[in-house]
Amino acid sequence: MSPFIAELVGTMILIALGGGVCAGVSLRKTFAENSGWMVIGAGWGLAVAMAVYAVGSVSGAHLNPAVTLALAFNGDFPWSQVPSYILAQIIGAMAGALLVYFQYLPHWKATPDPATKLGVFSTSPAIKHPVGNMLSEIIGTFIFVMVLLSMGANEFTQGLHPLIVGLLVVSIGLSLGGTTGYAINPARDFGPRLMHFLLPIPGKGPSDWKYAWVPVAGPLLGGSLGGLFYKTVFLGQSTPLLWVLLAVTVVCLFFAHLAGRRIQRSASGQAAA
Image (tube, rainbow, N blue to C red; front, side, top):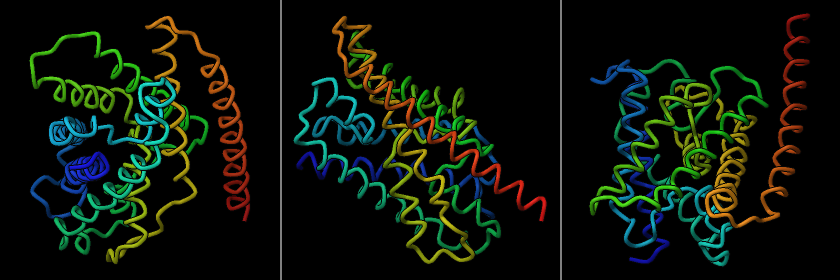
């Protein structure tokens, strides 16, 4: 198996199991309906662990453009392979979402709420606040990548490492995920959101592309910052890239602020009407 296929298959497993737990909890007339946030958090953590177990020995199991980009910025992964890894991750995420669609085929029609159906495929904010939403994704992915890289300093019993990575995802989901649904992975959000747009899901609504940039830009920034922070603070290898990326983050947050103001003006206009 090539690294490209491994990343594709691994990300497909990740989304099939992670999106699957969202479908089981959220869609009507499933045996897991309304089983709660703890089940979703555990399901996503186990999804990550199983995907890493499946392909980690072949591709390193990035399964996440934010991880790939962070490793490249740190010099631990060749830039020449970044595009192919990210492409594989997006295709794999789309394939995983397709499996979830077929797995729960009769339940889409039984679920009347369009937002619930979209929530199976992609993330959304509990409160729409572009700056706050962006910060949530940046912070969550920053911690994910920083801790992920820090794990290399610890010795685990052979075969235990993927399970620890899964527990890290559970921890982030339970502690930080309640604001935006913790995408912390651009492929995890973009690929399934695209499938929501393309698939003939009964009674579906819009795919909320106005929000879609947040779970892409936030994790990419947060993951890269986490990697560079680890290199600077943990390894003592100072790099100007950290400050450049911080400046880019501030600019992105400024644009998020402008987007928030437009949302407020639009809401005020609708209320006045």
